[in-house]
Length: 138
Image 1 (cartoon, rainbow, N blue to C red):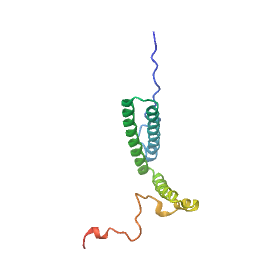
Image 2 (image 1 turned 180 degrees about the horizontal axis):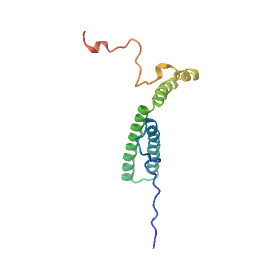
Image 3 (image 1 turned 135 degrees about the vertical axis):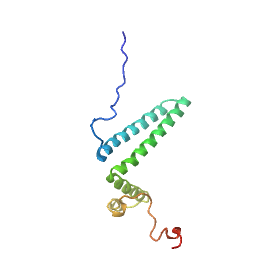
Image 4 (image 1 turned 90 degrees about the horizontal axis):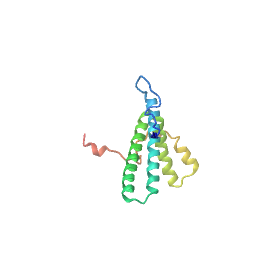
């Protein structure tokens, strides 16, 4: 009689609670989801790198790219659930731009402390830009 080996499977929720998760608990769970998506991306990429089979490469690349989308969606959700992540993410974008421009270490570090770096939802327009003309005449 032979025994079939089973692959270990991670429980979907590491803690079972008889209630809905708070935003903080959900954020923690989403971080685990992001980790799983990144692990899957790396695993599929390793498979792609380890084979010359054209169809396998195409299928694995397609699945890998879907995992990238999932990770991005989870990150966007985490930004909504945890304001600190949104603030740090906004600061990181500013710091990345400054680093790319060759700014000093002091300027890069100061960028994260500026109040206008908090809760940024996109690029900032230079002063003087308005949407006034787009609103029509009043």
